[in-house]
Length: 257
View (spheres, rainbow, N blue to C red):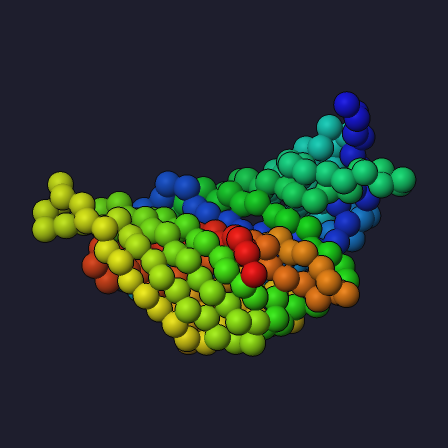
């Protein structure tokens, strides 16, 4: 078993980060792209889904992030604001690849120190290294995918599955089923559904479905001549579910052509 020794150079490149809020009085979720320069500087942004003026509303807020980072030999590290030595976030190495110059970090976990001020949530996240040569666009979603989603913060629990088909050119279709409240709080029911429409993937690997009602971030890819094909993406629904006020987030993985 290799005994890796990590340094700041082990964190080099751009990571796609998906974040969730734990606890708090309202759901929190965020997507981000943060880049590490290999020498101690980190920069990027997070797009946060926060509670709006009422608990039945959500708003999207883009927050820039810039600071410094340190990595210990054991794979634990810290993020610091530009003008302070105070620890803003702890990170941990989760997956590595071998390289002649030292281990390369493919996946990290993050725990931020302060609670999100809008929701009171403890912010945690996972980040995946982006291939530097990857090109993104509508062709990045192509084939059959399966998704799993959980509603957070609603009046009653709610979860669902979906099977999606992407044509690689901007059209998708979906069949899904959710476990939702029935006629009473104690009763549950399976609710089938379908959806279809347009999707758009930007050149940074973020995207939208169904007229912007769903936001997504491609997290894992395979490459063909530099073109990225999504093997996994994370998503969040822009508005709460009307029947119970839940904010849905989830993960979708490619299963076939």
